[in-house]
Image (tube, rainbow, N blue to C red; front, side):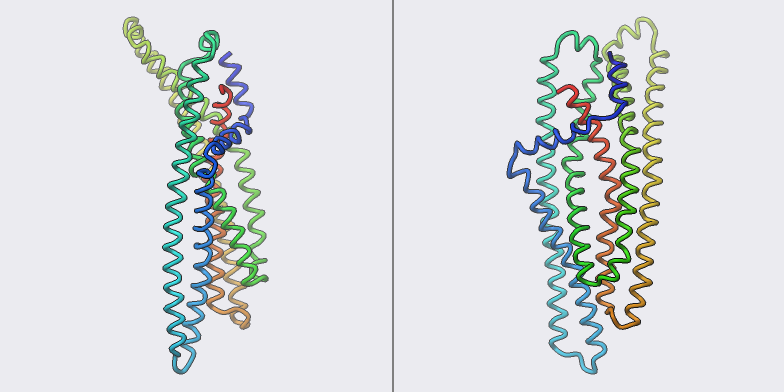
Length: 335
């Protein structure tokens, strides 16, 4: 029965499990919405800064070019500088609030999942416990719940933040310079295709990590529970070999996962660098032609970072989502 369960899990995780885990947030109603409201304010504050920086640069350029810098120019410079500081402080405050409230909510969901798991395990029949090892159940109530909690507290928030930041940045880029925005637009579908491919490859790998980790935990639990019998029959060397083999299997699988994502990030940064090079070239031509100011070009460059950073963040989001999806499927297989 245990081997049949392993084969069933290896065939693919229950993708609906993660949705069921996220639905646990609905138990907290308004509290569940708080981090996303704070996130919205923090993102809008972040998006305001590059435009202010562009205005500052254009103000300085105009002031230097003028024979006698006007008092109004200096006043505008001070006002813009104070506005940048104010928006940065607002972003910091609301970023803290979003992180704190998201962590609180994720801990609450983990608390509910563990309680529901424990209650369900208590209700299961003797035959079920005979067929399933204690270590398998322990790893689901500890490590699997923690991976789901991390996604709900961090990954899900980062996913919403990335979507908001990319959408808001694209709107601002097109309102700043349409022709220059069209230059970097092809980067988005290329990057998303890369993440979809890597996500498809990585999710079965995460499933294997959890299965091998469960096997390792089972060996550890059985040895600790039966240590007197092991010592009585001098089985320590064979048990050590058995544990080493399980630990080697976990390490090898984790290295395989790391190898996949080690390849992903250089490819993403290569695509981002190509986009930056295109902006440098076409933006420079527009500055020479007089259709783009230096301040607008700097503003565009800063907004471009707001495109690339969320794209790079998707690597971590995919990692957490893949792990959480596998773990949620294992949790709800019992629930």
